Image 1 (cartoon, rainbow, N blue to C red):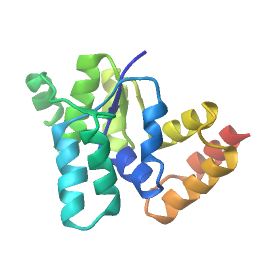
Image 2: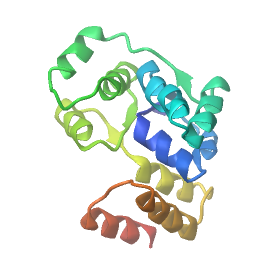
Image 3: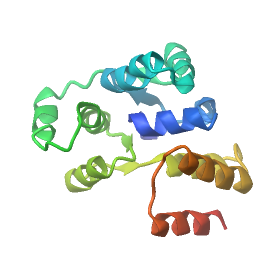
Length: 168
């Protein structure tokens, strides 16, 4: 099984909708990077984001393991694109290093993953996986999707329609 490498957005939104703790039931090894941890936990706590405290606990309990990617040259190459943030580059590099799946929602980072041949999915993939594993019902996924959107998660009308279709 390929390990899962979490970027900030899936962690944040699963935290906001109170589903982050359910990732412990996903059988894959789960990782994130120090740069993602700083963005989500340290900055999140400073600005009073409640999900930051839950995510911190999940990392402390090693449900998600912290790992610094070793491919510094590859990170440097990825960072030459001004639209790729440090955390995104780190997640992509760690996914390559571990032959894992990058979990990210950022459009630019997903585009780079496509170009680089890095397997990637996003927050919705995690919700649908949880549904298939019977950790969530269809109704809970639908409610979670709508709650994420109300909280600022963005998706196109086309993607929303595809997600609804996938629930049937």
